[in-house]
Image 1 (spheres, rainbow, N blue to C red):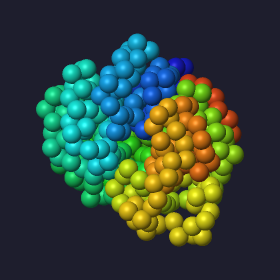
Image 2 (image 1 turned 120 degrees about the vertical axis):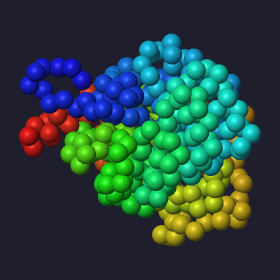
Image 3 (image 1 turned 90 degrees about the horizontal axis):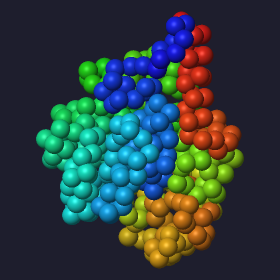
Image 4 (image 1 turned 180 degrees about the vertical axis):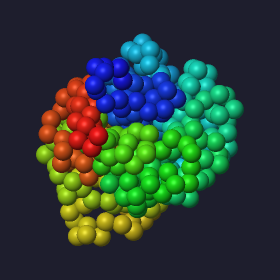
Length: 338
């Protein structure tokens, strides 16, 4: 990022690759990272991602069109092949390619044929992984950027290693840009990532609690009130995802009755009970759906995603203000080590 000559630059080669000014990437949170949030992050100098997991091609087209009207900055579309019916995934990718989308973000299992398809179309691929082996597979498949997700992350968590430990292991085996993800909500986290040789950070919780986020105000308020110790890793919110897929959420009435038995739940044994609605779409207890602006019903019992960095979040500002604070904090932290 340009600035005074005495300012410490946060720009890394990743910024040139992605077309952003600072290496702060918005996580492509399903339901939450819509065009308002993604464009706000992009216009403020970060990198925006549209969270389009399991969304219909029609909605993807609307979101991409609105994104382009709101910003001329590059962005990615986030899809999750392992959690998407193959026919829908095929239609999603075809829609994105028809629209001229130039970058994709993928998560969970590495599917080489999916990566190859979008690479053949000339697109960039950012792949989020939770293990060293998945990072190797993503690189072999043709990924351009590896996002190392740690167990501290909110939402779906692929691995069980701390973010910086995993990022260090991946950095030792690849020349690709490595981005740290998980529990990072301040500029100190960005400074720490750059110090170990990572190319940037990938943030969800920090931007979920912003004005432009499509999350319900109740969800945002719970993040503001939470500490990292108020989150748990559980697979009880698993309906519409593969068995065993764990998520980090703020504790609520659903997790409290588990009495510490957070993992090992079989989705086939969980009841299908509608507790909330988005229009005419029911939202089930134990599903992975989180409360959005449009959701009504028992919001408290839904999956309230948050990472362990939630304790550093004390307000719900515009996304540009959150990003500016992170930039200032990172520079201050790096000045202290220069």
